[in-house]
Image 1 (cartoon, rainbow over the protein chains, first blue to last red):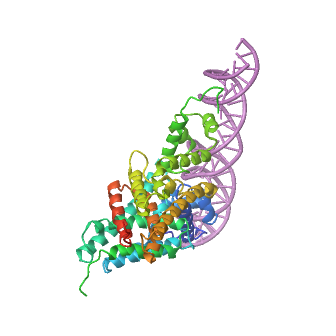
Image 2 (image 1 turned 120 degrees about the vertical axis):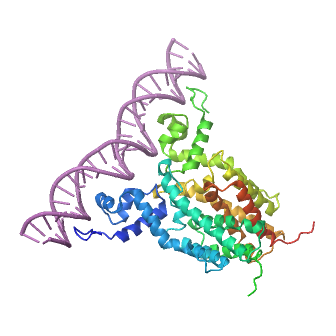
Image 3 (image 1 turned 135 degrees about the horizontal axis):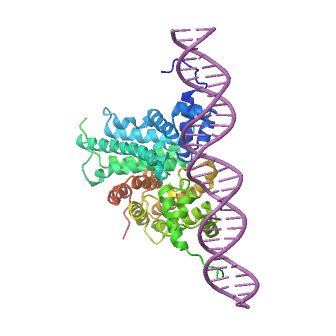
Length: 205
Length: 205
DNA sequence: TTACTTCTGGATCACTTAATATGAAAATCT
DNA sequence: AGATTTTCATATTAAGTGATCCAGAAGTAA
């Protein structure tokens, strides 16, 4: 795009990554422009606004970047080549490991990125809420597919499975941020999945 | 205490309740003094600081008030007269109904009250984190008591039950705030508890 | 009444917020 | 070279932040 003119002195990708880490740790509102500019390499206000537009625009870009990288732990949910149970198990385990890893802030940015918001930033909150809804849909589709494929009983217990998985999934953010280890989360997932297996149907191999 | 002098013109309890609602909906940091004073009956800064000390002091009082009222849905957890399974079921169902009720902000104040915090307000965050830890302990004690009483198998699945319940419990805040109804949460709890029953032992009546 | 205590309203504190304006510096293209 | 384009650093904007201060009003106790 910008072939001519003075090249920017800071690395835009590195700056975006640094911003993501800060937003991830503190959330949208408590993160100030001053903190952002500082962690992005002491860039000036002019450089910031020229490169990213505004705080909200930067946050939206951060969310997209997050979804394209760390958020990919959710991708099994949309992989129709996977057996539904596998898709959910991989998603849960992958997300648990990711959220509990200490090389970056704990928990999920989509869950905790804008959980405290004043009315004026409703749009930011809605952005993440929509993404969470997408996740719920993905889980529900997986369970319905399992029932349709005859891998899961069609009963009251399995009808509630999507809500259980979604609630558990979103709860992991709180647990991970409060220090629960990946090992503990993984054990909980193993135990939780016996709820699936208890309602599984035998499939002819 | 204050027998003499000019009596305050506003109702301190009503003001505290109004502040609780606002903190509950928006969280600690995004809630400004201006908003607080406004919702507390357009009281003046002087009146505010005389009655509550500071924003943080008010928040701590709000949390105590919350625990003493809405937070009482957790009390079965500490009632040793209840059968452990009952204690957990009542806590989950009571909390689900409370969190999804629309007469006040959705979700749990202890979970979402300070989830987005800058470093300078770490103390506020720690206050709620300690309370969440208390809940986890309560759940764990219940499960351990059930095992000790011979009502629950002692195996890997049941060892993970406390973490499952805690994660699910804290996840309800996200779901309730995103609009999940009490009915759906209740169905999820019913289904989740089959995980307990699948590992229950028969007790001689 | 008089003395004392407490609350109220308004002005104001120093500071931070997100966002601009300006002019010079540094690179590319013709 | 010279013209153009873009970025940079500094200063500055207006509004909002939590928190104080003070004069006066409104009550109680003697």
